[in-house]
Length: 112
Length: 112
DNA sequence: AATAATACCTATGACTCAAAGGTATATTTT
DNA sequence: AAAATATACCTTTGAGTCATAGGTATTATT
Image (cartoon, rainbow over all chains, first blue to last red):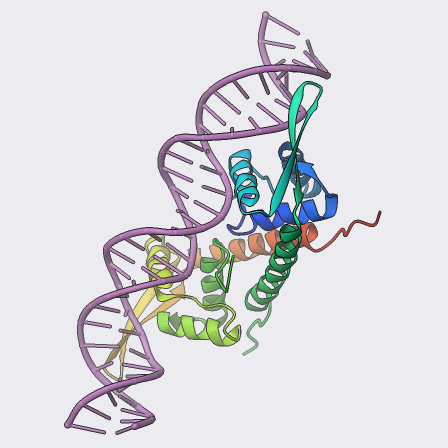
């Protein structure tokens, strides 16, 4: 976990959470949003993001609208109904995980 | 991240934190401790743990004392000096990571 | 004209961990 | 006494996840 690498398993949840809040986003926008929102602490690489988006789409979690802006292609992703359900589930799983991890990692400093 | 799988990247930090608190532990003890302390929410599998311990030892993070208890072998691991430094570093990295993750995941519900 | 920014993409490989198997002894249950 | 469970170690294999490194094309900036 050197540098600013993500913990593996958290990427898709981050993406889904952003889509839940923003309604719809395109890939490049997601990379920038995460970079800005975390002050550079998280960097979603495109090599990780695009395959993830494609998989989520294939799984029926996301749906796409293609638009052309300034002669550049944009693929806007948004949650499907199934995706909305899955997102809620994933977020609460992550919440639970973090809670447990904090209990192990940050608490119980040995007194004796 | 279905079921109770760990986020990849957190296992060794968990192990090091336990050793920091407990002084010394053996492998099997670590698996039980994590299971008990998290009420079964985290399960450190042996197939993941033993190779991790061996790597940490090879990297000079841990050192071993072998003891025979009830005719059974035990390998007690403890942090080296280098390991103590590395552990502090890893824990604060993880702390920082979780803090950032929480900002992304749990905060800023869109208001309008 | 060159560079950076925007916007998409894929192939490859490193790394981490889980699943599944193995060995051996001690304890408990049947 | 036999079977099952618990203790304690281990390895091989493979799935999954992501970063690295490359690629294309357009627009904006220097």
